[in-house]
Image: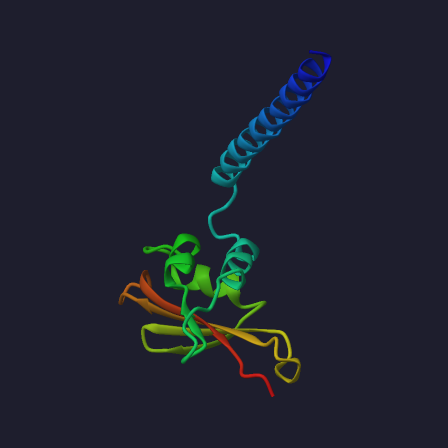
Length: 142
């Protein structure tokens, strides 16, 4: 009987600890989502983190479409100058007509950890963002 009581108490403790951890995880997730909404939607570092966490599943091209991620941070209607000012410190930029091409390089190719992040932005004649085509490219290992 004592063994059964001891085992029951141990199981109850484990369940209680698990519920507390789960509750903390849910609460902290809620807090972070509230603070995320308060933060500026164009936080470039958040975008880069999210892009570089993307798994490249296309083995043949070694490329992943990340346009949906970019559109969360560089949304339709943003001004061309605002976007250019935002990304010019970290990206190489080429401008042509109503398009803006941006390139971000992470890692070294000779180590096999090189990732290239390309953004092609399309603007209206008024200089407002219409859409983007963006992808993450993995360099081949040498």
